[in-house]
Length: 402
Image (tube, one colour):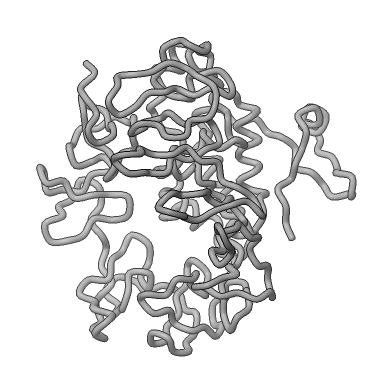
């Protein structure tokens, strides 16, 4: 079982120049500082290396050029929303911590998803292993982002405020929080009465699930929530290769594995036997990322390279990246055709936009989707949880702060 490599800060300096070994004689990768301008590219490269090491892809270079790495950068990578704070000294970029973050992405366990809940929820800089943005704002001082606050503090800004102050402690029910969650936690949406909750993902044995309409907890990478226990669910460790599994009831397989015949297995390579997934299948696809299973839904097939433009298809995942399967109705057995998706700036009146793009109602062209805090020029560019206010994507309902 692969584990996150834990290297103490005092060891980095001694290992950085020539590498070293851990207590078991295994070579420990040296820390290589990563500058801000290089971070997204280095992080995407590390992610592709992990996919290759864990058997999900074969071609790392292809991975870096295609949707997997591009989507990672756009979804959780380091954007431009901190440019002003970095320029003013409210945030300091730490190249050594950035290097540690990239190392963790590359060398992490094949059972744990590379993307933690804090990363997916607010960005890679909110993961505790990736705190390369060092806040310089003292407690009680004004802030716009939690990354501006000194280590361990958070900014209590909400969707109805134009900024907040740096605070410490645990936030239980932030009122429609914008960024008011401590580092290492995820903002879980709540109701109009309770607002969201800042929750830290728990490890094996911690409580999870919902009781009485209240979310008790969430599970960390490498675990899943077993809800058959009473009076609450419990986070259980995922199954490793060869161990028992069940996609619907658990136990679940580790991140890089899939469940077949009740056992966790590695993704299959080209020419290997597979069972074509149905449209409602919960589990991971059986073939590697650049392949698909050519059998009918639920029937045996073979892992084949994804289809090129003009080829018949049943689902978009049968086509090459940046393509859609136009005209397919898989539930009715109707095939479609692999066709290139519209790219940024291209018309979307007759074609669907590609991944991480959306069709602008104003221009009828594809525009890149934008995360909260990033600049926006089109009212439809923000993710569904945001709206373009004063040229910046902010949460729905946020006021103008000009």
